[in-house]
Amino acid sequence: MVVNEKCDVYSFGVVALETLMGKHPKEILSSLQSTCTDDDIKLCDILDQRLSHPTFSVLQDIVVVAIVTFACLNPNPCSRPTMKRISQCFLSQLIPLNIPLHHISLQQLMSQELRSSLKL
Image (cartoon, rainbow, N blue to C red; front, side, top):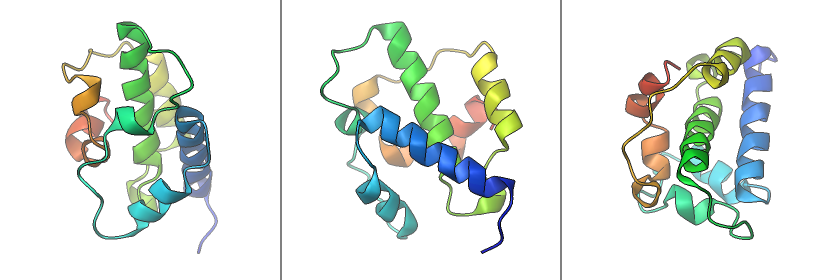
C-alpha cells in the first residue's frame, strides 16, 4: 500500500459513513471490498435510526453526503476524489435529486451516474 492523499480521502469516507450510521460501518466496508454488493441495502436502512425523520432539505444534504462518502470509499484509490474536490462539492449549489430516499440503494450511491451529478 502506498500512502498518499487518497488514504486521507478514504479515512474521511469512513468517518462520514460512521456519522451517517451512528456506529462503525465495518459490515458496509467489508461488503465494499467484495465483488458483489447487495443491491437490496437502501440508504434509509443504514442511517442512524435514533434520529428523528429529517426534513426534505436535510434529506437532500444526506444524499449528497452519502454520494461523496461512497466516492471516497471506492476500492480503487485512483478513482477517489481529492479533498479539494470534496470541499468544492459541499460548497457548490447542487441540483436536487429527484429520487426518494427509500429508493436509493448503496449500489446506486457507488454508481458513476450519481457521482457525475455532483461532478465527482
